Length: 38
Image (cartoon, rainbow, N blue to C red; front, side, top):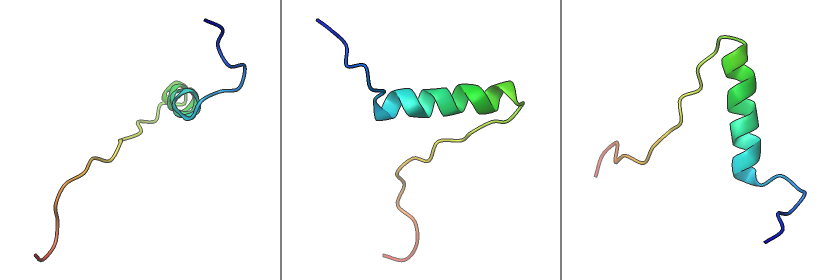
């Protein structure tokens, strides 16, 4: 199976995560959680 030469969305997120981690930053990923009234 041949891989698509274009980066997927997940590849882009991983590259950004690696870049900012190298700068000493931490990226927190949001998660679904019910909040607010109702």
